[in-house]
Image 1 (spheres, helix red, strand yellow):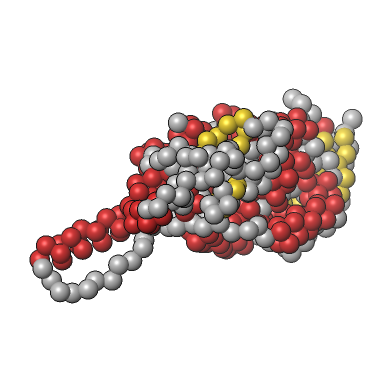
Image 2: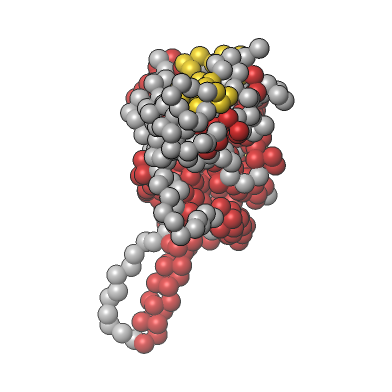
Length: 517
């Protein structure tokens, strides 16, 4: 029952967060992004941080198997392997049965297709070394390491890469990084289960410091245990020491697979209070009947196969539901703009000096100090203004550009979804008073200044009225001029300027955002 409940909740979170990264349903399940541990820590969202730590202290690392999308994704990979292994194992059994019935003297090779895990000691030096490097990286504002290994951000890159590849709108750097991340995580889960969560992931290591003292834990009743080893073979975290009847609670992710695999009822998830010190539940010696080991070895594979795949129907339904919804989301996003017959020269992003970062960031430094490169704001931006950066210093962290659209004053999409505090929420009307950059006119590119045509497109579309058309000596047409006190740097002028590939009016970013009176 606990395993089925965990699978159902995990499916809800995985589907919701996946659709968020595709760009669907930010108003419905955007709160799921705000529950992610590392972004909440960077945003100093103490309510979420304390809530997750309390959840872990009471129930163990439930977060890693329900709320974290990367953790749930690895469970999906393991389900695929177990399902495929069961199919191959059954096919092999049918083939062996036919050979036996035919009386063939051939000695076929028998292979083990089902995944078997075994107890592995924690890799302390790697585990806590990566955690220390992550903390140092955050303190020194070196977010690149966090962007690459943080589970929530890594999952976001995977989804954005696949979604972008489906509609042809993904940046090459993001596509390559996302696919490499997908391959690495997939292979790690396929071969070693939750090794990434218990060795590399800084969130998993942080929560492990609390989960080892959790009030509810898995316990092994040695009076019921027959030493068959099924629980250890099914443990994706490799944290059950079946020989010594111990469980490493710092690595247990509370998937409850071991409970479903124990036919003797020797493993229970129960309240142990503050005094629980081990995974054993009984001081009695484990039963070692004379023929128990022989019987267990003889039938272990068959029984373990049955136990490992118990509840497969539930997992299958959750996986198919996820696949269907994600497929629908990708189809909905795969829209292509079709222009006329005339060739249109695409705009290019000009050299700006200081970077442009969204209103609500406060400053360029604050934005990049908090950003985990999860790509959620990129997927939420309806105007195509945000895109992942390709430079080494801010690799895959978002940057702004106005080639495809401009930052509309009424749009708060990025500030509404950012879970890391890189873009703070804005009050209604507040965005119209924040100057993120300043427009500058290049008269050498302006059609009106060159005497080629009367334009005024930038002044006509400026939402703050900062651009006016004025007379200039020696020029037949009026040319644009910018009132700096009124400009907010939204980029409407740059985006709608007919000059190509570089606009005649461009926005230069402010290192620190200003508030216009």
